[in-house]
Image (cartoon, rainbow, N blue to C red; front, side, top):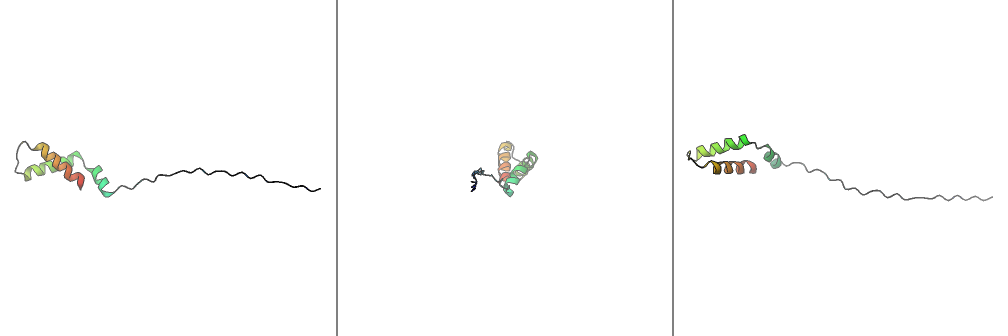
Length: 72
């Protein structure tokens, strides 16, 4: 008696997953995150002193300090 066995093969599709790799923080990103209100306040005061203590420039000094610190 001749017995033949057939082997049934099934292909299983592997799921294609795309893993997103977190980008490392750049040094500028870390610096931006570490700028505190106290840092901005201190720099704004320095700008006030450097500018001759002119009254009424607080908003401009604050904006300038904030821009300087966030760029560094």
